[in-house]
Length: 86
Picture 1 (tube, rainbow, N blue to C red):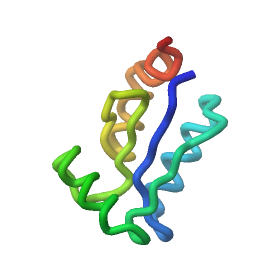
Picture 2 (picture 1 turned 90 degrees about the vertical axis):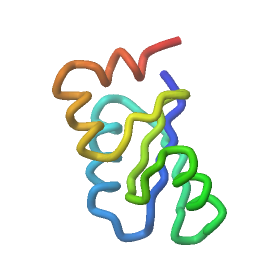
Picture 3 (picture 1 turned 90 degrees about the horizontal axis):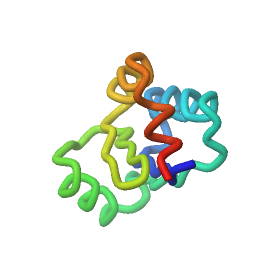
């Protein structure tokens, strides 16, 4: 299963929802990067993704986007193949 990285904050309902979906799809570990605790990581997230909102989710080297993007990807059947890429 691909490595999953999520930029998040302490109080973020969309982050919780995204984590729940990923766990339901078999993701055992999510690397969480708390941008509320680390301004450097927040700046890195914004320069990498062009977005300021959380969550920002990466599966392997693919930037999925936020929670709505993750849900849409799952809804069209693209999440599991992305998670299972070698």
